[in-house]
Length: 436
RNA sequence: GCCGCCGUAGUAUAGCCCGGCCUAGUAUGCGGGCCUGUCGAGCCCGUGACCCGGGUUCAAAUCCCGGCGGCGGCGCCA
Image (cartoon, rainbow, N blue to C red; front, side, top):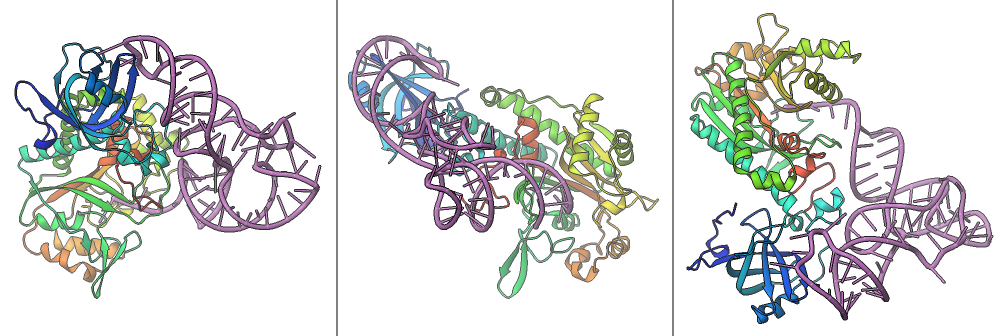
């Protein structure tokens, strides 16, 4: 599939089937009387291949054979009637315009013949984006967001933006990045949670595609300090099931959308995004704990599952034929103050969505009753006075509501079989990385 | 924060355990040549590296100490 570019200048038809394609040389072969140049641009994940023959276009042949890997150029031409390349669509060029040449040889291999360590890969990500594999990963990322927007808009949700500079976190300041905000103390937002909820008094169905800033000192393959999520919140719900339904439909919509529209990307990555069908399996938190305990894993009473336990649960569930499943009914002890408690006082309406043993989303029904919310905060040892801006909204007919946050990078990891979450974001912010 | 592993040309690696045979090997890149519509092309020639500082020793890429950097695990995690 050849995509039409939104940038007219980068890709336009100048009439009579003549096409202008721009990009960088990622591979060049001089083979006797023929020069073969592969261009990586934005028209396709696979390279555009220009073939120049000594007897057909002698001047361009001479020009092309001297070009370096990494050169930025545009060519005008047409699709070749002869298609012998196994790598991309072949073109016959009528003209080539050089825009920029590398000052020195590229530090990394943009065709992927020589392996690159993750650290180097992150450092030179912008160059490696010329590599079809890397390009495919980030085109798919864009596809996830594109699909999510379509899904929500179709369902009548409105896209919102909540502040990323906030006055307080929901549960103390330990995991927040402080920022100087004139004479006040402020933080980077860890989650749009509280603001999404406030919006339930005026816009009962919202979604937001947003960064999460988390100051935890993780050093693992599945944590970032700046990650992105697809968040949603909906009001006038009949229960937590309404929220879970939205989430499972969204995830299925995304995978179907990618399967259909990102075929070439999957081919380049050598994967097939698996088809998911809803409803997803629901298991109760206690059932999960029982399953794990019968496998000899210790789970302290009322505590959340560790990552290792979640991974093990993924294996157990896979044996039963479930790759993606909800864990529902988390104990109050293990959740935030804003989740609605069940009548028994022990359980809540919080859920997690796990995909192949990794938590990719969490959410639930929130407590919308003002006095219950105050009670909950006190129970969690929080001072309601610190949340006045939030609580105020609950005084004016807050409908029952709930929502979720879906981690984009984590979804990508499981969908594309990435080993490290850092492979799923272009510019990485982790424990030590702050540039580029 | 704790624990483990690692740091060798542009990139990716071998050598380190057991110091000398390392003038540091290989692949790829880069420069040159041959050949050929190649597709991880092939063949030949060339090019280029032991993270930093200190120590042990006749002798250190190799052993020891410190620093810096990377990877992973755990803790922690809306």
